[in-house]
Length: 167
Image (cartoon, rainbow, N blue to C red; front, side, top):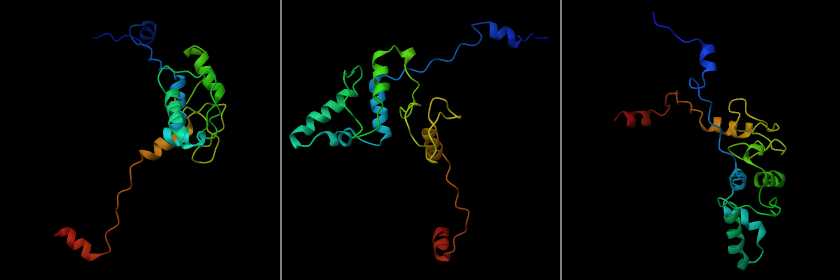
């Protein structure tokens, strides 16, 4: 008879079950990009409220690209509310604290639990019960996107189109 290790012996053995890998921390540039994409804006669209003369457009767009560049941190972030919602306090925490002290953020849109956001049902956003890494809004969007379309089970009422398909 073959011996099978008990569950308790497997839990005590660190080799038996490796711990799940920790997700990569959300960095400041990731947060800016996630919030912009959650607003459904391109860099050009997000830049538009900040330039008032045509000669400023290229500079503003360059600055917007730069704050999303890997490794870049802004010392004083300007008010982004003219373009999209961004929590400046969260951004500062991401810049100034070690990753293990970063606030919990939605991995899809960058939402934090201190910010007001409504889900697709009009309820206050919270953490998803299905995937604790994302908010309820992103979970609802993801589930809606991947729902299978119902098959067309009704027979065709146009006999000509049915005959054409048969031919």
